[in-house]
Amino acid sequence: MAPSAHRETMLPRRHFLRLAAASLSAPLRSFAQAKSVRITDIESFLLRIPGPARPVTYPITRVHTDAGITGTSFIGCPSGILERWVKPTLAGQDLFAIDRHMNRLQMERGESGVQIWSGVEHALWDAVGRAAGQPVARLLGGNRDRLRVYRTCVFPGKQDQSDVSYDTQAAFAVRLKKAGYQAMKIRAWRPRPMDDVDAVGVIRAAVGPDFHIMLDRTAVRPGWVWDYPTALQVCRGLEKHKAYWLEEPFDGHDIQGPARLAAEVDILITGGELGKSNYEFLEFLVNKTYDVIQPDTRICGGIWWARKISVLAEAFGVPCIQHGTSSLALAGYIQSGCAMSNCEWQEIIGGPELPEEEWEPALKLLRTPYVFRVENGYIHLPELPGLGLDLNEDAIREYRRNA
Image (cartoon, rainbow, N blue to C red; front, side, top):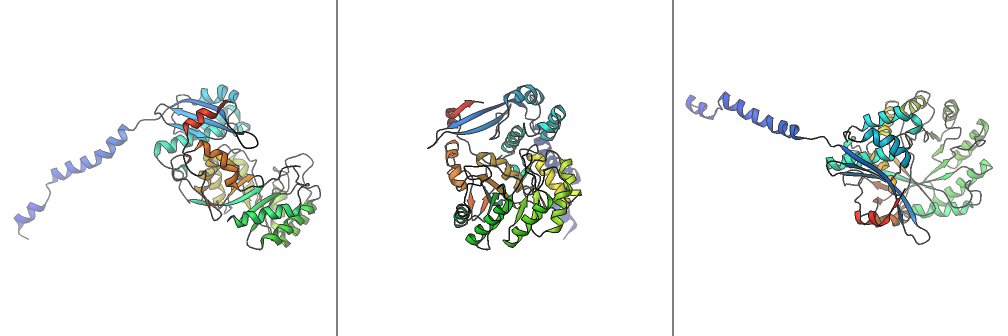
């Protein structure tokens, strides 16, 4: 190429610098124009929807902002706590500083209060997601877009389920399997522990080998804690029926008992649903207390703290499978679980009905044809921003009641 032609194709240095500065200034201008979103109000109330047998009540917490964005969760917050602690702490604060907000509230009330305002935390995340135009799970890392579901079925009647026949439990497990679900959990609360093992045997015979069966002891009542020989005997029986896991066979604060049992048996020993801090879960992990930890996104303080706990567990190579809930409160749990690399399952708690049947009254509050999309045993991450619920504001006004 001739020198003159070469000079014509070259960009003079001053022009290059001018263009480079212009290209850099565009995002800088956008950044400079970004404004913080401030929290203006927080409220908690009830929604009461008429049902075929009795009304269905949903607690709801809402966070309002100066940008016109409202975040909503279906986890309530006691009005006294809201007025005395939460509003004075969060009013006028930056919406996006969720970790700072939760730390300040914890300093006010201690670990005993974290579950009280978790509904506020979920609503904050809903508002943040709506402001960003993204599902919360993507803002937290976006590891997956679906979770396997297991149904925890608590039959009406006696809490220990001693009035429920094994065949009744097995029949519901068969119904779950036919509907595409891959797992079911039952309570291990019968007065004679081996009766629950026998129930698992009947369920296994009914559903075949390709279905997960879990057992939940969770000894939350005084005097209900098994001794070690009983727990070992139950595990040996569950092994014969190829059960998947046994949940919290001892007191929830017992560090060494579950670790000893987990080292001795082949089924998984799980627990941690009542844990309220990262430090509590760190103690579980360091001591190998459980094969699987199960923080509750409500009890541990919210979506962000559950995510922190999952990262701790990941460092120890331990699965983090969240304890569950039901109906619309599940929205935050799905977002949290889909952000975790070590969370494969989502628990859905309810009675002897399919989750879709349980959720039907909630459809009156939404503008979508389904509450959550469940296909082939997986619950899918909603694609809508925030917690993923497209709310019908007219219905919320119609069914609103004071908390």
